[in-house]
Length: 109
Image 1 (cartoon, helix red, strand yellow):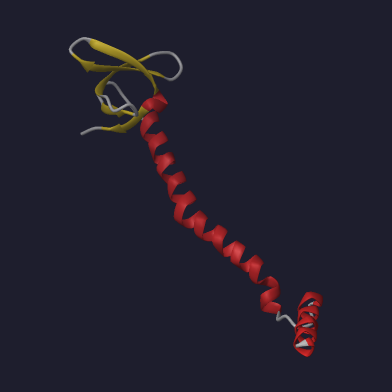
Image 2 (cartoon, one colour):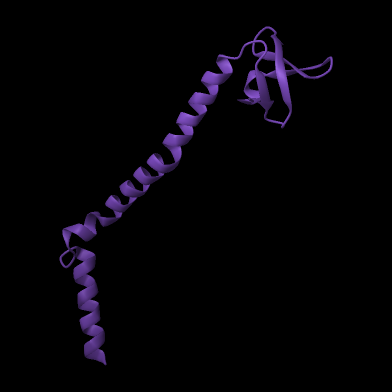
């Protein structure tokens, strides 16, 4: 029993000192982290940035008469613009509501 413990201790000492480990296992963690970050970037971050860029382009191209859907779920027609980033949306009859441009989610068809 004592011999087995001595052998296990000697094997662990070799891997701690770096004598018994392969070069791949030394850089394995670093490679794994880089791959994980790359996968997250290409599958999650990059498509979301592109989608937000397209939405901001749509918001900046709004004009009077466009049918829009707000982030709150209201459909309406753009009736005009005020100073800054205020959009006046007509939601029914003579009811007009002011929203910021960023509250416009999409153009409705």
